[in-house]
Image (cartoon, rainbow, N blue to C red; front, side, top):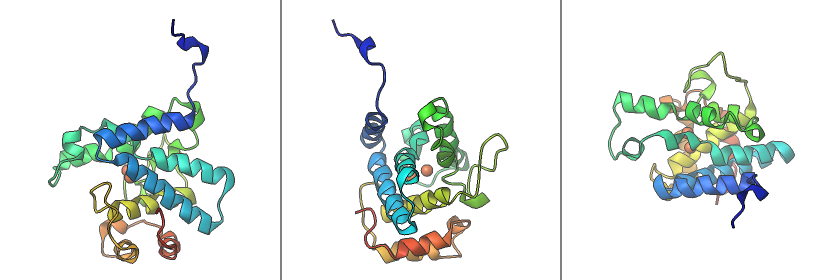
Length: 200
Ligand SMILES: [Fe+2]
Ligand SMILES: [Fe+2]
């Protein structure tokens, strides 16, 4: 008889692989997006001289940063049209939703606050600063935010198409008139601009 009680634990790598596979199957290559964000994050951290435990932590954080999107109905997340305000509020809930879902997993407790604030953009994004949740001016949050924005633009919002030229994406991120760039750490964007084909 099959005995599951023998070994009840699952490795973090197996857990993440499972999540990314489901993201790819059902959510339009969201798993591939997460892998790209992880690769770009790693390239920036290399330039910053951040390695060891912090780099490993950020790899897991980047791979799981959009896990909260699995709570959003596909009809909204993949809608080929402009979202209504109400729908966009649901999408904006994904960092908090991911945070809550992962909160009970002890081994992920250090990555979870970074997931919560990956769209925070130093107060210009979401969610709003919440007293109950930890937030800091953590450079690691800024790195993930830049890597995520860069990847989302380079994918042209259609996952699995890694299309735009590197410097075209950097130009979009440097555009001060674009409200989406408010609060983004431009020093990190400058570092990213000097990296050749990050995430490839
Ligand atoms: Fe996100
Ligand atoms: Fe993302």
